[in-house]
Image (cartoon, rainbow, N blue to C red; front, top):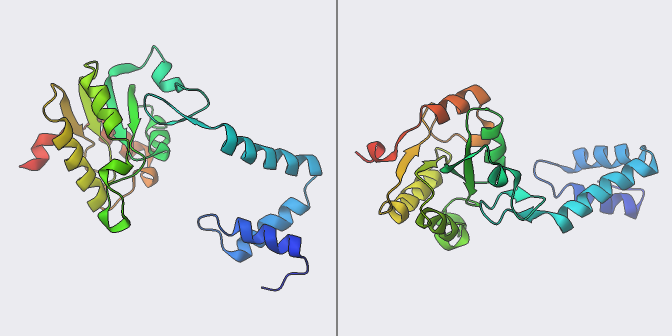
Length: 204
């Protein structure tokens, strides 16, 4: 792609680094920004800069937060005895949108995937072990995507936590194998949370 400006080319190159954004789409976005008022573009740029510099991760659940403790963990209305283990923040948002869950979360930050070089030490696993060990948690919902990596991670977590006096459950498999949590419709996801099943039954 030939550019009439080095500044234009640099901006398109940066936008095209985003997931799912090719050069043509990147060019369209950059040209759109060029046609916007300067204050709007500055507000857009400032939002991204502040996001990168000021975003924090909850000290309890590891979810993205503006504060050291996120709103979910600090809410007195949430059931702290029930914790839902998810892969990342997108899954928290997906489950919250169902309005079917009133417990708290623990964000693992990924899934065990030897092929991609991701092992248990790369995830927030030690911190969930410590939370369970503290004794307040009574049930752990293993809400990970129905993929090989998801099942591997669930099995590893179960082995790490099974000796503690807590109940284990997984979301009902109305979600097809290979399905990603974030792409499941809210009704199906909500029902899968409500109709979760004991994890032990899936081992038989």
